[in-house]
Image (cartoon, rainbow, N blue to C red; front, side):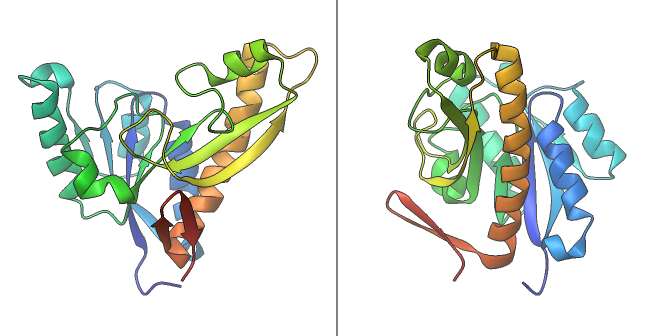
Length: 205
């Protein structure tokens, strides 16, 4: 176990169910991490409310409040970096971080995708998997890079596709698997450390 808990900053854009799973896990000291801040690209969302109820500091940076997307990216990088995170978790965060963010925090930032990467990237992974007719899909945790769902893979969990699945039922089962994968893997990263070697992410020393 590390001498002090790993510092997590969690970024949200909506309801924050993955954030809540991490907040719940962090209540156990053996998890090895604490959420030190929650950031968002919009206000008035349940994800921020969850953080506030848990007594976690929050910050909001809306793209429309900055002269350009690059200005937002620089400001957002500074806001996140100010909390000195060991790991940044994009938990339903719906903005792509950019050229200012990645050199500073990219290797310390992970995101989830509701498909087994590299299959079905983008916004509609469950729909695309169902339409393609695959029998197994799932979810992926990856290190953020400058692509869309293209980063080095940290963990994956398979989810069978049932004959009577709709996009909604399939996506819901993927979300359940995703939360479990996220909590388990973030805990391991916090306790054991990790390193990125090309396309491979290795947990532990």
